[in-house]
Image 1 (tube, one colour):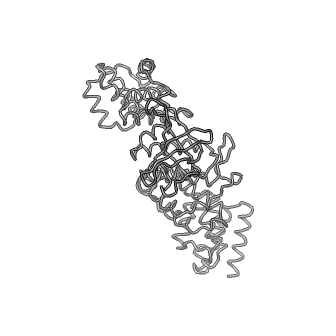
Image 2 (cartoon, rainbow, N blue to C red):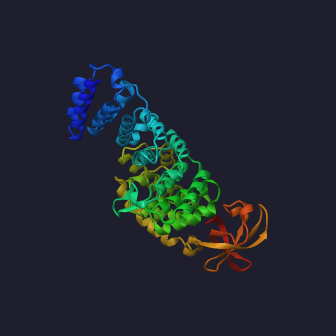
Image 3 (cartoon, rainbow, N blue to C red):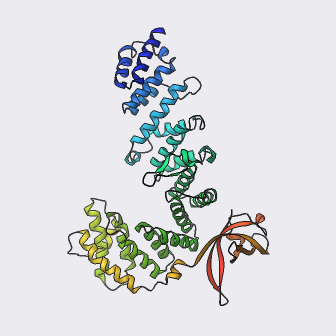
Length: 452
């Protein structure tokens, strides 16, 4: 045992001087196959040093093989705290090294190991490893199917309080603006996103509500992405009016083409054709031609189906087809079928050429469409206030809210995200309302009400 301690001291000295390859050679020449395994397993520091050196030479996979297969170890913070700690960092480095393609054939085994390991970490004593590993896992596993389902299983076992609300110590930094989002904020945002990706729309709405209630000031545009996921979830749960209100509010601040595209599809879903066409054209024009708009172009062909101009439909279908061909992307069968059914034949040789022709048409279309901008934005109000009058009690009850600015808003208990038993006069609330015509007057009606 004394000889092994001396060897370990040599390995540790190499590690301290960052002579990692030399340290590994020391282990290979004087320990591997030369000292009984049971003696190696008694030396926590030796195993930790080897894992550290493998990690520092960018060999996290070799470190995992050494720990799990060669030594046949499993995490044990009591008996082997140093080796267990280094094993965790090796897992983290391995997670960082993978790409999305690694999930095509199922969740990699080391990801499952990392999820289980994360549950063993003391969040207060090893916070850096705890938080970094979670955010790296959540980044890589935010994919439909098994990855996001397993991520949600982990998320639902983690108390929100485990993450720091202190921006100064945050790991989530906007490199351009050097503004930090707290780990607590980032956890809430990723939780909502995971639910949305897994089509758990009611849970997504609740998670978004929770984040809005708990975070006073968002960073990295997190409030926009939360609102976007909430709006799309509201659409999926049949609350289209509120979904439109939220999306309108989002695109008034952030005009990314895909957000305009999503709003166009909500209007299409509720059969408001002018609004749908308006936002489809806005989305197509915004930020110019992009291969990522291939689906948008294909969908736009359908909004012109009522047109007697078959050439216009063909131009959109051909643009979608040519865009995919140029990227060597798979061509959906529906696109091939539509292209053939309309006997499409476009002489333009490139997608950019077709786009240039259609762009002029989209601009003209925007001029033709009479979209009342006030109606399009729906004259909405979001404010803090107080319940000042209850008209009827019970699950079907209703009443009035007076905002801090003095606006009077009618609300129904069913629109409140508060149990009807807790709704009473003088309760402080946050309300989102829409102006409507009632008996010849403009009045405010609440689309949702929630506690402050």
